[in-house]
View 1: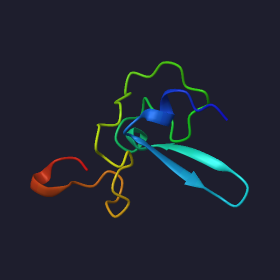
View 2: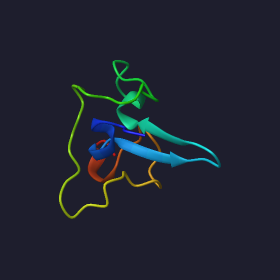
View 3: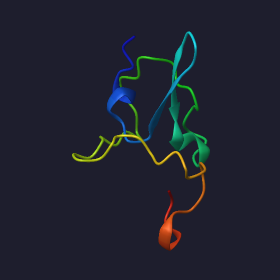
View 4: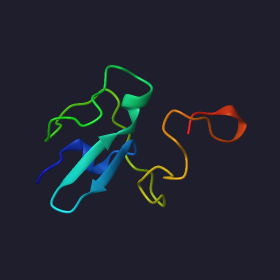
Length: 75
């Protein structure tokens, strides 16, 4: 399935289930403009942030959504 912009977004967390794959938008935890599970493919998104080169591409799963990271910055 073509996920559109979600496939390369730093805010996207891919969740693989037994028979399905879901694309969770982590921006939805802090901003009500975003759907937790957007209708795919997403072609335009005001919250899109490309994955930075050298990063793993997914947020740290050990950090709870909406929590603060080191120094009080959003995780």
